[in-house]
Structure formats: structure tokens, C-alpha cells
Image (cartoon, rainbow, N blue to C red; front, side, top):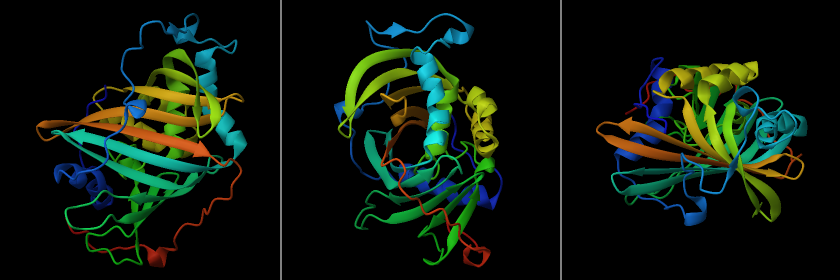
Length: 295
């Protein structure tokens, strides 16, 4: 379990993004409860599962489960682009909420675009925020909190205590996959289907600090920040890979301290439509908001 205190590092830039998740949790918004099939991955493998063993940290370079999972991020880079769906499921004080997103990602460039749908807030309708992922940065449009609707907010993800693994309301798909480079204790649980595609289900843990050291330069800064911001680097995951070894779905479980309460966050990323075009344009400087962020 990863437990951290949701902090604000790096001045105003870091504070702008922290509100998306921190305020949503503190406000006790209601949302969707995950079904049994989408439950958070347990920290301990189930009885009967066969763990990988042998070599450095169980490194089965011959092509077993550990090698397969660790190779998935590099295989995605060779695949190029894909469509993506994201979900952050949170539970605190008996309240559950879900933040959903949909868009696309270029794993070679480390850039993507996702439209995030926030939960209802009392009588207010659900609001969409457009998010752009780029190396070391997160851009948000329709941010609210006094930001004009036609302006973007830019956040330096290397200053965030969690490296934007949960802060922005959607985990960067490149980072979600990149965490698997440091997979440990991987077990193979059999074949299931994701989006009608047969996939192998793998379960294990990853180490954020080790993943940061193994990551390409474009992801290293944000993951290194996350490694410093968590009290432990160990993150349980479930990964689903198709028969070519390509990642189709990954789910990570995070927990952090929010005041006196512990908040569980399950981040799920689903990848499909490989090769689809992705809009990677970043906003020009004139469209980036430089004023004060309310709240």
C-alpha cells in the first residue's frame, strides 16, 4: 500500500492541479462504486497463483511473466499511438467517486490528450476538463476556479508530490505503463477478455523509485517526484496484455492521507485502437492563464 499526504510542492503551478482531486475528495462528492470485476488489486497474490522466481528479483529473462510485464512499456513505444480510457476511483469516509477520461496517447512522444469527466457536485452538472499530457507538464482547460474557459493552466508535473499519478484526475498513460518497468513478484492468473480481446492477466507490485530510474528521460522527472512524495514506493497492480505482449489495461492502487482520513485511489488505464491519430498540439503561450487560481 502506498500512503502519502497530499501536499502542494513547487508553488502556484503545483497548487493548481492539486485542487482537482484534493477538493473533490474533501467535498465528499458522490460517484460510481467499482464493480467486483474492477475491484482494487490486492497486495497479496491469491492462493494458487504461481509467482515468478529466479535471477535478479525474479527476473525471468527467458520470457516468463515478469519479463513479459516489464517489456510491455517498450512494446507500447514501438506500437506508437492508441486510444485511451482512464478512471480514478476514490473512497474516503464511506464515500466513493469516479473521475473518468477518454482520449488518445502517443507513447513515442510521451504526449496525449484526455477529456476528463468530473463527478457531480451537488446540483452542479458533471463538468469536463480537457487535459494535455507532455513530458514534465500537464495542461488543463475548463479548469474552473476563476480561470477563463478559453485559457489553459500549465502545471509542472515534476513539482507535484505524486508526479501527477493521481493529482490531475487521470494518470498519464505513459506513466501508468512505465511503472511496469519495475514490476516485481509477478504472477500469471490466466486468460480473460478486455474489450473483446483475449488477454493474459498478470498481478504484482511495482516500485516507483526503480521505475523512475528505468524510465526514459521524458517520464523520469515526474516519476522521480512521485518516488520522493510517497512514504513507500510499492504499488500493487493488475496488468492485462494481449497475445503480442501489448498492454491493453493496467490498474494501480494508491492510498494517501487526506487530513485524518486515508483515501484509496484506484487508477485504471485501458488502451485500444492502436495506430489511431492523436492530437498532440500544445496551446500557444498566449492561451496559457497567468493569473491567480481561486481556491
